Amino acid sequence: MKGSKKGYYVIFVMIFSTNLLWAVCFTFFLIEYNKCIDLIYELVDAVIECQETLNENIEYESKGKIEVSVSAYTPTHKECDSTPLITASNKKVRKGIVALSRDLERKFNLRFGDKIKLYGIGTFEFQDRMHKRWKKRVDVFMWNKKKALEFGRKNGVVFEVVG
Image 1 (cartoon, rainbow, N blue to C red):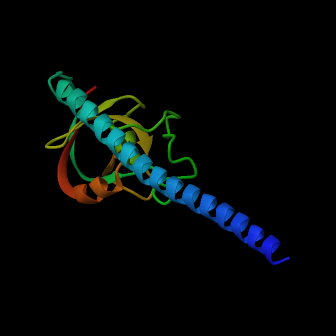
Image 2: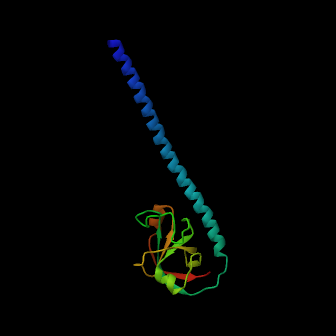
Image 3: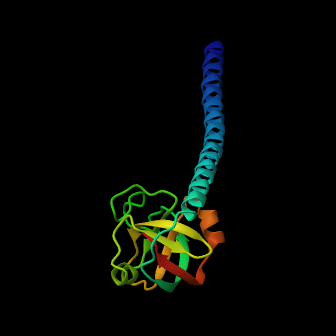
């Protein structure tokens, strides 16, 4: 009888050890997976920055200028609606797009896909819309929450519709 209890104990230890090993492996996988995702976001950001540099060299005809307040947003339910990965234009979010306050959209008769320039920041594509309570505001889309917070709010930025 004592020998059979010892056998159960050995089997229990083997099962427990195997589950612990899987838990450790899974935790390590998640850590490495998150590092990989961060690297992919950085690579995408670098590619977009190169594209933005090329876009800045393109000349567009101006439709007018105004000073606005600029901030950044990320695809979270807290900052967006129930579909944070889809813009108001029904496109997938990506770096290089902005959300505009509705007053700017009306004032300049903007359509989704129009290009806007934020002096000192870059040229962007209008693909998203802000809540109606905001006036003279632009939100630049970013994947990284930390970078969005570092970007902060910039007041008095010159906004120009360029295409």
